[in-house]
Image (tube, rainbow, N blue to C red):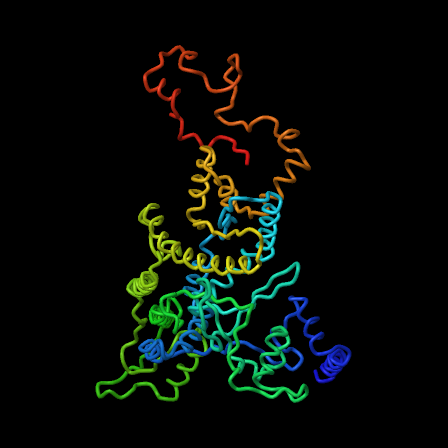
Length: 519
């Protein structure tokens, strides 16, 4: 390994000699895919060390959560790796929302230059497209739910965007700007990690050396500059009411996770014991209790029996009556204990266990209602994230102001939201078509690009879809107009008052979803 590392180190030194320090950092940072996470050359790994936590230690930490918040966050990361229940819980909330969004005007000036207005809108939607929201936000939400807060650094090139998580143990919320949290990072984080410092960008490198000093550049350190507020920072907090402390949102159920693990181990131990048996070999005795068989002969037969029994079978040599017995088999109480512990876990989180197979669903309506509070947790985090990105849009200083808005749409109410927007579109509600397109997983740039492709390039509506799609409302009835279902009169009947009212009004409103809608 040493012979392989030396040529690599020589190449790095040659690069450093060829370029200035600042230019080297710029070139390294231009390609986000090459950001250093671990120093493989020197075999340095920046990974969390997970250890088993005694339940007594967990109880003690939770007795004073504010004092032990760093330890509790570490425990939360440990449980995310070791507990399938906790893993599924965190990912359930992180991926509950569809992350569908639209861009709406923040204000409407009296005088508008249409071309500038359109150019501004397109610049914003393409900027949001570059943010790759549906890929970056779930990672933010996972960490925010795990630790109670997410600290990250945004890095951007003309055609790419990336958010690098920052260690929460070395960051604190320092201020609030336009409703968004601003954090400061403890530059001591890099004291033993200078090998990854250049991957954090030139500004952080300069801030670190302004704090620690740099003999090569003749910079004297200043201990008062330990905390640095990065301009590219992003901070999302699950509990916005307590700015001084950040705790995992589900830390109150950590004890239930350990108890569930204990119940499973107990069940496994009892199941293992059920598979063991013992055979007792009897040595006959006389009236005085003296063995009738010589001890050496008894040992011989005992040895022969012991060499022929399968694994899991024990032998006992005794003067008592020969018998065969097995340990008492487990009853359903052990299974019930595990199930009860699982139900307590989900109940403690406020999440229905029906979605994870631990409880029997009583009805679809009860399951639907149980997801409403879950959706609110996800939507609240999305509102905070949208507020951060809207702040970024304001900082662009564009002629007109637009805002990012996430739909209150989850994986459970997705169809209902689509149906409501489709109906609103049919009734001509302003903006409903854009909302409908967003609910169909289309980004604003998708809408603009596909509309241009269909109308101006392919001319789809005139050359391809020249007639409405076939449905029960457009099938031919053999009449003169050749469309629609047979009327009551055509079938030989007499129209009723309800029939006439339906014709004058909108009596077939329940069939609105069957119509073809062109956006």
